[in-house]
Length: 234
Ligand code: B1M
Image (cartoon, rainbow, N blue to C red; front, side, top):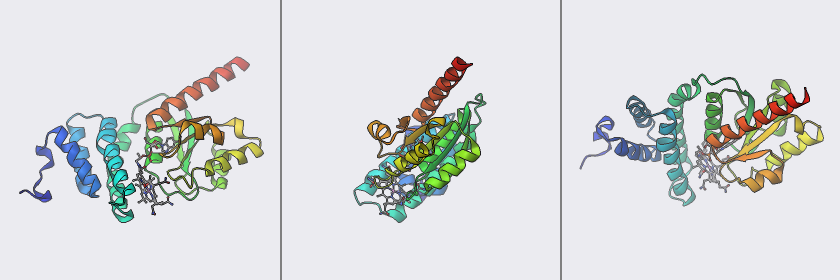
């Protein structure tokens, strides 16, 4: 039987290759993910389809086995690194859409949380949709968000959380903005796997975004409303 080393990725059909990429992501095989990503692009796949069908879907499978105790942190870290290597190739392609400028977003993962793949993906898609994105990285205390919004004067503040233990921190940030009388100056969007719409409302965000595509649509929608409101005042 052929072992992993004998598989020539370019000989596989699209469907087989995507399946193989799920396996390679699971096994944290960075070089293979880079190769697979390049092959799909060369075959005319859109960057978005490569991202969602090969990478995000692969990471979803990793997440299931992580939850079930089949995979552990070191293995998942390798998967995350392989995923990031694929995203690194896709990033310039997703950004270079020539979309008209929409506005500015500051985004970061909240305090205590180091998950950044979803946040990075949202940032990439927002840039592709014409937003300037200031990425604060991971593990952000409220001070980081406040300092960044005061410095950057963005239209949108985005927060990401992947843990049930860190998602309540979004309320700390929003409540602090309220205390300082600056909450209504910004559109606040939140996202991350354990959140839902109800949670978004409960913490006082303007909207919860299920995924990166929804984040882009929601952001555009809120920016259009903001412009209409400002035009109405003029
Ligand atoms: Co973590 N982890 N992890 N982990 N990890 C989860 C989140 C978990 C659900 C796994 C599981 O048990 N099934 C679980 C959380 C359980 C819970 O809280 N209920 C978990 C755990 C427990 C942990 C640790 C505590 C494990 C441990 O140490 N024992 C630890 C915590 C570390 C910490 O943060 N303090 C930990 C560590 C890690 C790694 C470091 C190994 C690695 C992160 C690497 C990295 O990010 N650089 C990791 C990973 C990779 C995962 C899973 C497997 C995958 C997350 C991911 O990247 N998904 C994850 C399982 C899962 O989510 N099902 C899991 C792909 C990404 C594209 O999706 O991030 O959901 P996602 O982003 C989406 C949307 O959510 C949305 O759009 C994105 C794109 O479509 N979105 C936004 C996200 N942010 C947004 C912001 C927005 C809008 C939309 O702003 C406007």
